[in-house]
Each structure stands twice: as C-alpha cells, then as structure tokens.
Image (cartoon, rainbow, N blue to C red; front, side, top):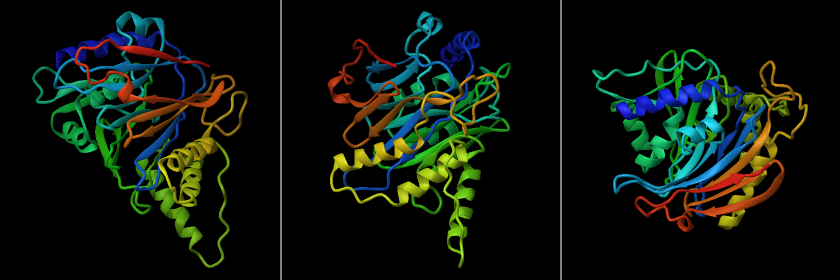
Length: 333
C-alpha cells in the first residue's frame, strides 16, 4: 500500500526530530471472569510526558472507530494528529498496545512487487484498530497480507500486545528481521496474560516456568522481585495476579486491575532499578496508566499528577458515525 509506505516516511522524519526515550511499560490481562474481559497497562518513559486521547470515527463502512492514545509533538500535528497511536481500543473490543523491546530488528520494507503490503511500525495500532475485530484477524493479516517494517538508521524498537473481547491475546515481535507471533493463552501454563519489555516474550514465559519450578521444590527460597526491571515486573504481576480475590462484579474486576497497576507504577524522580538508558536523567517513570474493559467498551486512565481514574465510554464518542469529527482530550500531567 503506497499510502502506508509514504506516511511511514513522513513519520520517520518526524521521529528523528524527537528525543528518544525508553518505554519500560507493563501490560497485564486479568484472569478469565464472568464479569468481563479486562486488562491494564502503564506507559513508562524517561522523558516526553505529553499524550492525548483521540476519538477516531471510521472513514468508511469497512473501518471501525477507535479510542487511541498518541504522543503530542508539533511535527506530529503537522502530518496529522492521529499519527503514532501507541495504545487504544476499537468499538469491537480489540486493543493494541505498543511497548519497547530493545534489539528489535524489523523485516525489510516491502516493495511494490511484493505480495504483502507494508505497515510502518508507528502506524501498527492505528492500522489494526481501524481494520480488525479480533486477535485472529490481526494474526491472519500479519501472516498473509501485511508486513510491519521500521527504521534502520535509529532505534525505535517496539513490540505489540493485541487483546480482544473474547479474552484472546497475541504478542507480536520482530526478531532477526522476522515477524514472531506468540499466542498468550492466559492459562497460567503456556501464557500468563503479561507483557513487559526485553528480553523477548518467549524468554519471560520460560522464566516464569522456572520460577514456578523453584516454588515446587521441597525446601524453596523464592525471591519476590521488587525492582522495575522488565523481568521483575513480569514476575511481580504474575505473583499478584495469582493471588487476586475472585471478583463478584465488573467493578471488582476493574479494581483488581488498578491494584495490579499500582504494583508496577514507577514514581517520578530518581528511582533505582528501572531499565532506563544512558543519558535519560532521572529515568523512567509512569506517565499514565490505562484499564481497558473489552466487554463494556470502556477505557479508564490516570496520569502521574492525577491518580483518580477518568472513565471514557466508547459509546459516548460517536465512533459509529462514518466520517464523523475526531475528538481530542489531553492526558494532563
């Protein structure tokens, strides 16, 4: 798709003008419940605290409306404010979350002669939320019709979590120039409903299995990881998630998600034990947190300056109106 490729080049120019920062984010799907499908995430950065919500109605009957979050910058506004959506959910209950995975190596950009269309990495969430209803749809497209490509001249290393209203999840990574899609069963055996950052997702799965093996020994001594490194956050969410009370209502389910968010929220300041890169000053801290209710089509968010949950119902945003006006709301910090 020439349009996707050309837009990718425009955003590539915009990204090169922006300060680079590490995104040490956490993402967790709550255990299966009769009260809904709910997951939560943090956005953790060493710099760049300005983000905005966008309500994006469909442009045609073949698209879906969505609520997204994107970083604001003057260059982004010059090329279209919907660019670079880093998180969001559409009217069908499909969500997309972009998070950093260092040492990512993207496939090559498709040429006009290739049998697949190219999607620039900054547009993956926008592309998925507009076009698909389920994680299976996304998986099929990435296997058969589309290739995600990214910059090679500077670091913009990302991987993605997709979750849907059925409770299904996939993690999409780009390793050694290949697209790697992992199904997350969220069954406590071959998937734990969690994604953080590096190393790759498969490493974290084996790490949790090894952790559980140690717990099953006759005389175990098990550490409770307390730092904010990706493996610590992954294990901590796994431990806390396994001990949650069974929710008796949708509200209980949302509150369980908030408690998990609290465990991986990084305060501002010089916090030790984060995976901040050299030159990031005071290092990573949580810019905002989000809770997605895939069943009720509701998104909750909070910022580090305002920890009170703000609720946005997708049904209130006119997201079924074809060609409707976009709406914007700053996530104020």
